[in-house]
Length: 325
Ligand SMILES: *[C@@H]1O[C@H](CO)[C@@H](O)[C@H](O)[C@H]1NC(C)=O
Image (tube, rainbow, N blue to C red; front, side, top):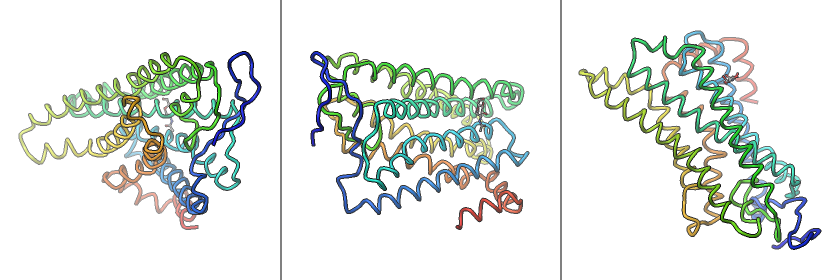
């Protein structure tokens, strides 16, 4: 399926819009996909919204860990809103085209929120490290100001990185096909449409992988190395379990998120398959945001308690009504 080429200037073509293939070749599955993704989107937004509200309303949860979790829930809402609504519209209308600017904007926001999530997970690991390794000075070290600074730097770094990446990609010449074999303007399928030397593109992908995935992941591993060595020093089994239990949710989220990201972004080009990639992209862009509230609320006694309490407040009641509608 090659799309018509547009106005040619010299030896390069300027593309003014893209076609996103998505899941549109499975025509008979359209309705099922639409309903599936619509329910996923609604549950993701509502689930994260409930976490956000519960943490904001319950004073018991006004600790650094929940400050970051609230920020993460907010981030997940933004993150899924970059890809899913657009995908739902094109499933419904059958219109798979996206403008050049629209594609650039989607790539920017997706990278912005994705990178911010990577950095926020590091901040959360650092918080756990401080809580377990310096329990006596924890509240001094992780004071409100430090928490806000850590979260804010995640957002700022994510933004700068996405801005640099997107500007670079969209300043390169596009030629030939404008068909993106993916369900949103993800970096690799868009880079495949760029003509000429791809040397810098690959350098860029590698650098991006190092700064967004590898470095944060190493920092998280270091934090957990220190956490584990400190937990092993605790004499009682019960004490060990108690210290470690506050990390379970975070470890689960980190494993799932980095697992699927690494598989997609850090891989030799020869083993590259867009169809396999689409499945993995579904995982990190659609499935993870829905899992977050589930993992954190089911694993966590404090969140469960707060959830239970707030079911009796007017606001939460309204949320529940919305949910059952
Ligand atoms: C997340 O953190 C940033 C930076 O500290 C802050 O500006 C923002 O209000 C926070 N969002 C939520 C929902 O907590």
